[in-house]
Image (cartoon, rainbow, N blue to C red; front, side, top):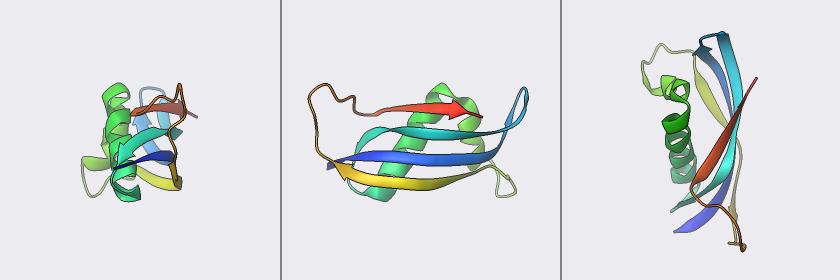
Length: 88
């Protein structure tokens, strides 16, 4: 298990104020980069339910693209398994 820095972009998510996009970023513990992205998305969906739209139907236009996923070394004070989402 390693630590992964994740940056992803979501597009086409329905929100109360219209269709939105977002940047998701954080550090998670996972076995590999695919697991890290999946975990980051699941963590984000806990706080921002709109993020879960990506899983609702095959017809959904909501997509999340990985921009950058890198394995990182632990640093003192680093928050792990924490993500943030900035909506645009």
